[in-house]
Image (cartoon, rainbow, N blue to C red; front, top):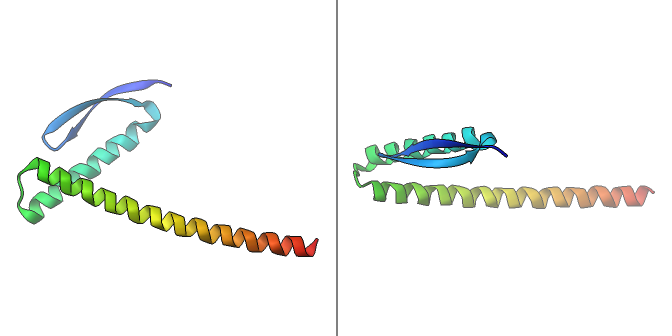
Length: 94
């Protein structure tokens, strides 16, 4: 497992990181998305306080994560239900 030393700029700061090679693109993309949200909130609300902006981004990301988890749970339940029905049909035909 090789790691890379990268620098990721979030807002006005740079953060040194060591990441797995296979995760580099994902981590850089996450940094880009964070910066885009920071810029959006800065323009939308006229805020300059980076801590406030980062808190808003963190809150927004958590809401998105909760919504995604809810959708995944619903999908898992539907899949489980479908598999149970298929299993019942197969058992009945044997």
